[in-house]
Length: 134
Image (cartoon, rainbow, N blue to C red; front, side):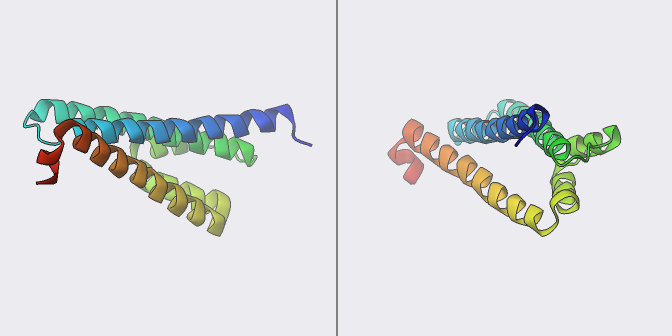
């Protein structure tokens, strides 16, 4: 039977993953809205917000997963995941979950990119219509 602490960390990990999918969805929508935009300022600000939100989401997810595994991350490791999530998340998953971590990484990586691309293309098509297809 699960302890309350274990169920709490499972819930935290699940919420962190949902948060990441929502962030990728909104970023796709933003990219779709700015598809033909020449406003570099809006694009840079959007990308910066996206980078911070994604870094926080991956740090949150890895922290909750590490607690669930009974191997809490050191503050320096959390900082590393936040600053360099592109390398930190795969390293963490391979360290914590071995080969299963690679599968988790590939599955969620593919699905997050799919959400980003599909939401961006759908938004651009809805906003620009036939002009988008040209």
